[in-house]
Amino acid sequence: MSKPISESEKRVMEALWQSSPLTSQQVVERLSHQDWNDKTVKTFLNRLVNKGALSFTRQGRAYLYSPIVGRDEFLAAESAGFLQRVFEGDMKELLTTFVANKQLSEKELNHLRELLDEEAQS
Image 1 (cartoon, rainbow, N blue to C red):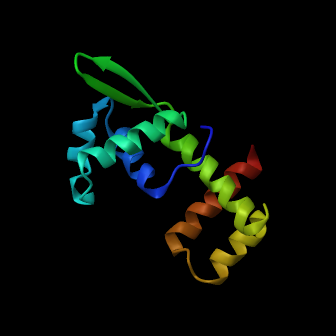
Image 2 (cartoon, helix red, strand yellow):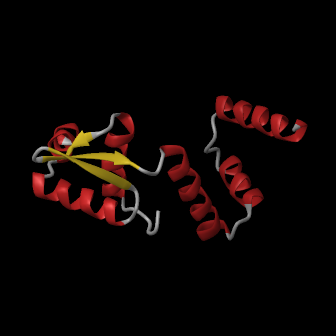
C-alpha cells in the first residue's frame, strides 16, 4: 500500500475483508448505516485502488472489487505507524501507558502474558 488510508476508507476495506469480491453497489448496501451515497462509495473505492489497497475486475457493466492488502497486514502497518508516531517506537512506553492507565482488562493482561511467554520460548 503506497499511502495511508483514511477512517472512511478503512470502513470500505472492512466490508471487503468480510466478503469479496463485491460490486460497488454491494459495498454501498453493506455500508448503508454510513449514509453515504453511491458516488461517495465509488470515490472511496477509486482512492483505494489508486493507493494499491484494492484491485478490480470488470464483469459485464459492473466492477468487482477485492482487497490486495489483508486485514492482518493493514493492522500490522497501522500499529507500527502508531507506535512510531506516538511513542517513537518505544514498545515499553506503549505497554506501560496502557497498563498504568488501566486500559487493559484482566483477560487482556492474561492474554498478553501468554503471548510474551510464547515469544520468550521461541
